[in-house]
Image 1 (cartoon, rainbow, N blue to C red):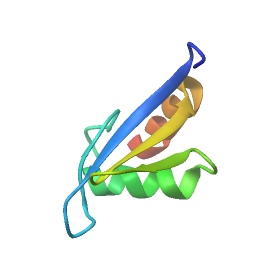
Image 2 (spheres, one colour; image 1 turned 30 degrees about the vertical axis):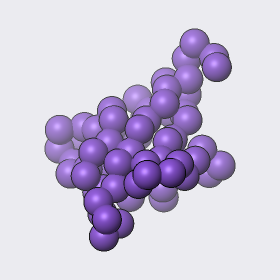
Image 3 (cartoon, rainbow, N blue to C red; image 1 turned 60 degrees about the vertical axis):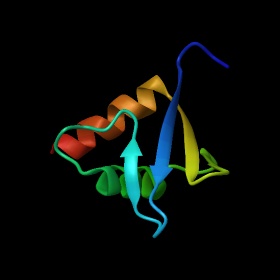
Length: 71
């Protein structure tokens, strides 16, 4: 894994809503941050077992998405 790559962990409730997600800006709910990530990225999402998932993004991409969420 590259040093500048960020892994954003996601946890889902049994009904499919996001309960926890890493790197979340304070202005967004967990679900809103997940929605922004899925709309703004391609081929960076990995579904895992047990109601979990993972986004793999560069630090620059995460910082840019956080900045866009603040506006």
